[in-house]
Length: 238
Image 1 (cartoon, rainbow, N blue to C red):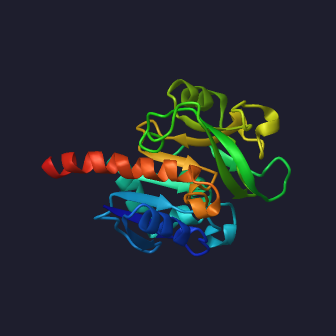
Image 2: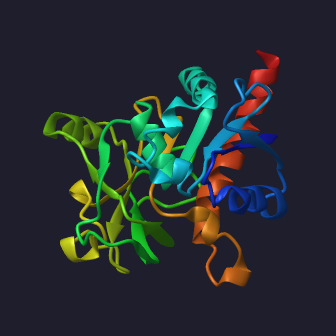
């Protein structure tokens, strides 16, 4: 299968994603420049972390207008698998593919550290290799990672099991102390109502092989690959 990694001016985790999907998980990868107008032939699209357009104006606010995002939105609306990581999550919010906004971290400082997240929903294309309630150790690196939305939208996310990851401690307790950036409801990652678009602030591509001392992130990316393997035969026969 062919995984597309979108490259914006300022992206700095694009090749990390390419490496994991290609060298670790054995998939074909296409680097998609932000001026492209089509994502035809791709089985999934990754919006990587980084500082798209230098984070000028507002994180993700300029990238949402890149030509490729029109194609990504069409791909998502047709059921294509889309993962936004860190800045990619911010772009998904700005583009309206996920609800809510990102605010500055409660500390008003850039944070780069390992944190823990609890898998709240293991029945998704992104978490099928995880156990519900499993605690994953994954790094974060952001200044604008405090997720926020209105009470009605939050209630909908909770009711529809769209909150996929919550910040927690090593034992899986979701507490204010375990929340590194002040995100509403300790939210670290959400999906759309259809379940094919996921945005998450932690970086799974940075902890996806043993040489790094932590492979927890591989569970998320490998879940995508396994989902696509099961779906592709059906798509071919359709």
